[in-house]
Image (cartoon, rainbow, N blue to C red; front, side, top):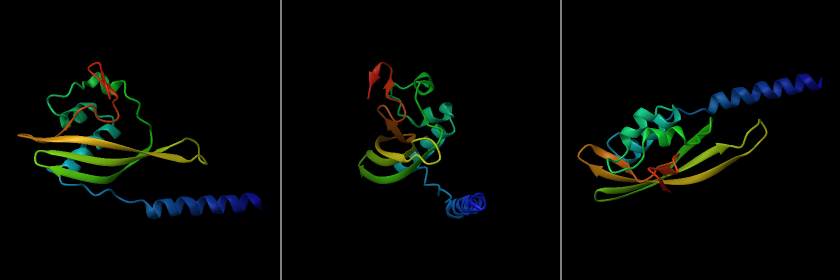
Length: 139
């Protein structure tokens, strides 16, 4: 009897998760938020060749820096805030990481991306998450 109750609860939980799963709206690629979204999608897919194209030309980050970065298998990113002043912008995101197993919790960290507007659009400057070291410099 207990096994049947656990099975029913498990099935209901799976159905609930699938029912509330949201599709992520694609932001305008010509905005700071859209640039950060595309960068993070590339990072999520571990397409570092693509991710690096969203970085400003003065960044010291190279492909090798991404190869060494720790990226959890499962995380969720939410846009928290954007501030644009002239040719610079700050995009704040919240990154929710799973702490492990099925009953483990999660933790959330905030990250701020600094962007500059160049001839080729908005680009991320500095040392962006998930890298913490680029070209010998630490974040």
